[in-house]
Image (cartoon, rainbow, N blue to C red; front, side):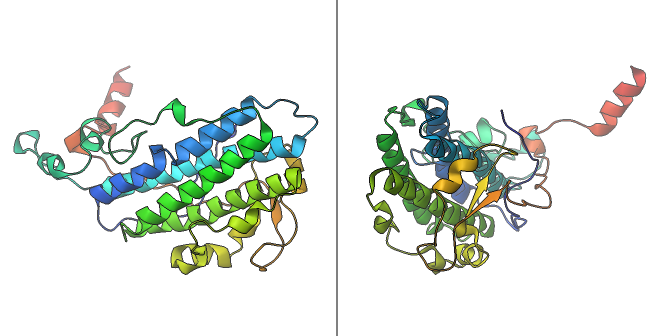
Length: 293
């Protein structure tokens, strides 16, 4: 089962101006082949279908625990896309074509389908699909695939970073570059524990360190790259048998944190989009209906 906390994993800056085309690029990180929906669903199904758990518990704990963190990553990407779409259209009368500007943008679905919200798909309008989930049942093969998935996701995050300087997008990307680095290293260490193969020598892929980017550097300076959060009150404690020892960058020891990150003080409350009839609820009218009832 899962416990939901109504916070984002980090504080996002308030958007100063919209950028719907950049929001579409960010949407690739939600529902693309290497997006957060893929990392979540790969690890979640691997944890659901894990066999022989009692014999190799640390590896199950690692995969299951990282899957839970990925739920929060989806939420963070979604909040970013919504921030970048907010107030991108006029709020005029429907007869004045307030959504007219949308027809020149890269993804009409943001304005026709979701009411200016995130899509479970990629930046080209394609839908995320279950064929992106790899779960062979072979532990070594699944761990190797997860390592590949994390570095593939990192490659695409870096390319999206190069596409936009929107402050909300870059803050989110800085954090996810660091956390994705934790997951890639964790899977590398799991393979090393299991097989003796030093996969972590392949990192970083691409060959540019996270600290080259100011938005990622500040999270590394705060030690986020050494922490593996345990998203449970009492379970998944054997991840400490894998996530241990000195950090490869020499900045300190790896640490398992009992519980989730502190999270944001509050979640952004996205403004009404009357031109999209969202949410199309008038609180005063609801109060009047309630009084009559």
